[in-house]
Length: 402
Image (cartoon, rainbow, N blue to C red; front, side, top):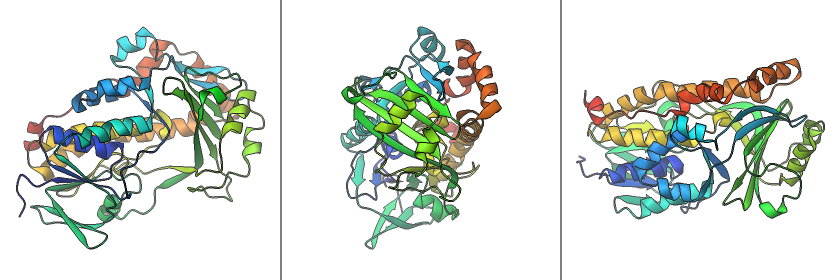
């Protein structure tokens, strides 16, 4: 039988899992983080973070560390891949943005953000990190959760949270849903030294070049010494998308009518490296069962349209830690779902809509979208984003006990 001192088990040591471990540890919980990789390495490329995540960073005690390694871009803009003209722009560097949303919009190397979280966990005696731990099953007897891991290991805890991504093992053990929903696009990412970027391109802003069935995003990192580039394109019908090391055979066709800067960006991509298939899952109302729940992409994976995957996971983490302080984990998990599912589902649905009806349209539809969005003022753009960037009001532990 468990007691109040038994650790909370967190599966996955990515941004969401590390944020949850830190949030729980700062509230006095003992936490064991179970990571399937053989070591707690930090990998990744650039990441964008909206102002809604900063109140969560305050709770985690890492705001200053994050700001010290981030860049506030002058703007986040979408431009037409054919002629380079601006379709839409959010003036993230203007005082009006900060006045409206109180916090900044930043870009940061994912490695730097992950390292800040992992170092904070390592500095807290309440967090134990267990690498090379592949979860294979679990049992919840209503008093504790026993995790079965590879190598005939059994790990016992007071509760279990799956923060193990879109292909979450914990989710599959709970819901048996199969593979994510593939949407027919593949992304390739690269980072190059800024001094190797020897053509005319915006080096200060987040820029998304939008085309018919493809887009490219780029922005600076690490005090503008690095240039982060992501290229995303629709795959052909006879080549289903997947995580692959092979470049798409039709890239020359995809980009042949695009702006010269687009072609120069494409030429910098190292397409011999792994590509990521773009995918998500349908929103669900319930992702908990007893003393087991899910977090981040394991609960509500989204397309990257709003650059909010990490923000949603970190909001989840702080919300969950707040509610678990009440002690009744099963009830806390139900309250957590109720607090989070509509907000995260809206991110999922609106991401799909913009992906299909704004980011990648062509022909007359593209002309209509450009005419509509290019006429919007700064205040119009702020109003469009207020539901997201105004942030999330954390529920109180008493709500989980009600």
